[in-house]
Length: 440
Image (cartoon, rainbow, N blue to C red):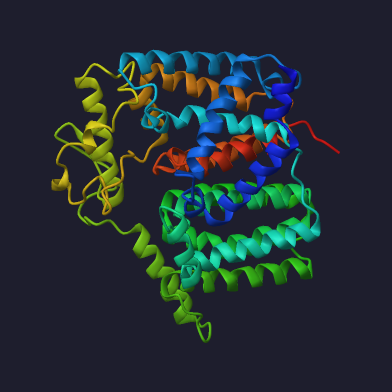
């Protein structure tokens, strides 16, 4: 057993995984869709996650990362697995059907937490931070202009999909980079400079891409800003220059995300028009006469188009589970939700999307409720609560809480946690940032 644990948690496996992690960090969904021997990289990773989950949970071995967590976490994970088995059997899901495990990835992806905890704590020196900054600029520029044609052709040849970073992907990228750089600089003025510069670039882009992503990242920005105050002198010349530079970059980024061209000059009219057009684009309701939320005929609606699309879908999905007496135990893993099987084009936007491939309800916690029922959702919340209360934590509970809140807020309006790359990055860095003993 010791040899098996050493093999699964070997330095080779962790190094290989970290390379895959880095590439998914940079190229997002496009990289995880690369085919190798008929299967995508994302599918291999989730298969590995399933094995890692079961092995770590049920086999005793030295240096098991579960031993560092609150004992209730292991109890919760055990119950979660048993509930999965019961739901699996109750819904007549197929043992050898890959779809059964695709729809249950919200369970197996948790095991990336163990790999992050068992890996060497990531702290960057100044050279590596500069390299990371180049990657940040690369992701920012490609999110606006896309990849070069040659790279797009290559991706389409070897991957199932060419897709730039979505708003949720950009948000997670921003969150991890900001926290990593600040931790590496121990929240000194050096890290604060990167915080201001990168936030000035990314926050307008995030608002343009996704409001939920922007809100989550803005909250994290405020928290990280506050943690840097101990090493900040507002009257210092360097600080004033940094703030002036950040305001200029914020304005340029606000203009650039909407127009994709660099302004020839910055003037009052450009500043005013840029901010007002972005706010109107993102904050304007499609039904001006209706409030953001309103109640009508026993249902909750919204004057905002995107949110209204989600609210109707969420309520229909819950109604289906209640109608089938599946609210407690869930519908299982055999097929897509009923709301994606019936005709729904009357809502102004087919729920399956333009490519007819969407089958996600764009809410992580609702997905758990629908698939595994109320019992699974309660157990999962119990696990997250006890992760938050785990000791030792490398860093404060407040930092861990803000990190988790930001990600879960994003995932409450997006299908991010049902992909392979997003939970991979989230759980790995959650474990490595906060749940691993500091290594020198």
